[in-house]
Picture 1 (cartoon, rainbow, N blue to C red):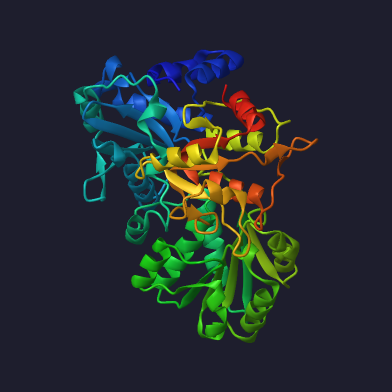
Picture 2 (picture 1 turned 90 degrees about the vertical axis):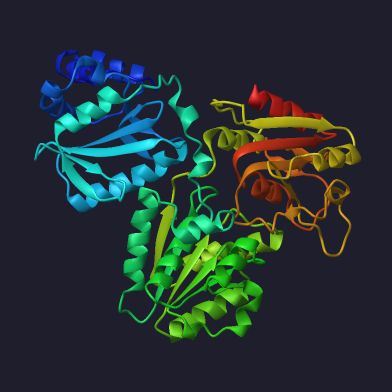
Length: 489
């Protein structure tokens, strides 16, 4: 995206041929509705007597934070301050306040003073969010003074200012921020939450709800936010995790939550709870699922199943086909998360091409993917031990409880397994691909060695835990290394 003079933008809208105007917008990376341009024109007319041409320079228009999708109408960056201006044809004080508070949250990470304003063209009024998050009306001269007094910071690449991982709050890995409410849901998450909460308050005898979505779509944050809201409204939710509890979940329990591992299901009477939430439900056993359904039907509570049917780790879980069984529940409400908010485009593209050698996609970058090759498992293990624990989370495959498996030769038993990191996320992840990985005739990534849990699925589980950086350690496997180099180059 390129900065622009906003008066130039308005005059281009008014006077350029339609196709030339579209190319002008594309050149600057601007995606703005005609109505918003007209709102901007109205603002500039109101500011004309209190401004000069230089005040209209250096604006980024319609910028979206990568991965997050959070959009700002107008941004201008100074050495010590940021000016954010939103354009509305009409709005309410409540909605304006809500949006500007959200904008302040996203911009405050830069450590500069943030000025958040909204212009409403129908009323020809300008509002500002003060330091106490209160909304007040200001004169247009106020905005003119802000622009004139700002010492502009000439930004060439706006994306470099925003680190998406700063905003991706995990209930497990950023538990303190989550408890304090230092996060926001995407528009899609908020819409689903609103509908789910309405369903939970339905006066029907019972409700069943499913929330599904692939890795990185924000299922965990959405579901845990729903439970947080239920707790705040003095409801009585029970959250059942289909796996062992992690440190973040133990911390939430200390703060008054009730989260249990699925193996403790028999010890709880589900009729005592207003809502039962089953997270990672694709891993529940059929007999456990039957028990949950039966008990919910006997009472007046509701049940939410949150899951991704693809993320099974054992063949038995895949064969159980819990997804089909949940879909067969009578009168179940189904919601699907489709927007990727965690996995960035670079990592997402790499994963798609790694797991299918016949797939070719344009890779936006390769700066956050590292490749390392070692001939022996011993050398790879020694290398992994040198990694900075604060920067890299080394993830290993879950071993069999009965037989010795090849991946144990290079695995550090102190590191987290695929089962331990379900639902978690880390800024930097290191994963290992050994000599038994290969491609079949259809280009699908397969594993030719022996393992109790599915190595392809465990690799997918581990590799999709990263938010920002991925380190791939290849052991004695030229085929996979060659494929990886094709992808990143």
